[in-house]
Length: 432
Image: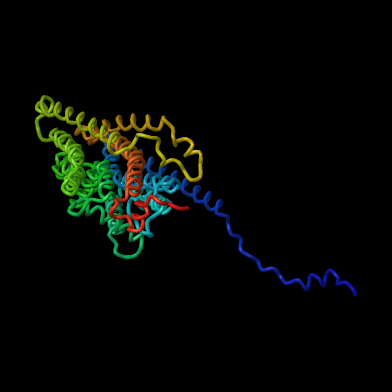
């Protein structure tokens, strides 16, 4: 046999198909992170430059105007990020949040929640940067359209009846909000769980009301109107009404629970939420009474009611909402990691949660003070800290509910035991 020559061997080999170069997932992830950082730097540079273009006497009013429109959505974005972290922790451990919240198979995972958070993190600051840039460059009408278009887009996404943007999850959220506003049906765990979170976002809804009020009255991007402080200003009666609404909803839920279960504990829980009512309305009196009367009468009453509300709420968190009898299992991940090693079974976690909860409970009540309404940086910081307090509250509250469900599942009444099993338990002759 005569061996093939090298050229003949090359000619017999079929040509290799040229496959496209597909970037690896890690490369795509790094590329997206770089784009995100570049976008953040551009927004910061444009926003800072726009602020510096304003004169010193108008700069503070200019920032307050932007804060009023975008502060609510920025804080909502933060809460969505934190909820994604909660779902990630639940998925790593043995706590079935799907069973606790009675979710269907189409529920959102932490990855999908974070995907929504990323888009919110991009869209809201981009609109805010456009507002700052257009306003500082004299395009007032275009600047005024930015927050209006953003609010309309958010509302349309929430109420859209089409099967886009996670329709089943949006329906679940809207249904829960409706049940909270009108607690006529039996109260479920998601109902009062979401209602408790809404009490921590009361200031967010108050700012949202003021923003929408300005949009309806066509007073967006008018700094001079802020000085007039008329229809939607600090004297508006709608502010304390919006602030107190989440607490009233939670109060009605507790009364409805007492009607259904006759448990006296629900009445004491209702009393806790009722202590927030005088705090909010006494604070609002600052804008409706003369200064001397506020200082001599209403301010001491407000301080007293604030202390009562803070200490009562702190007591209820530790003794009722949480189960601190043993170390938490919610941080015991199925695959141990640095996070689980740092948190699970550590005594400092409980010391931190109890101490920070006390401090932030008092701070949150102080934030309702009327003289802080225009100090937007302080209000934003305190509201963000309250959301972090609620974020750490979620873990222990969900774990307590999970322990309660497991305990009840093992306590099956004798009437529900099948007849064959009952006869087997009654028999004393067990031959193996």
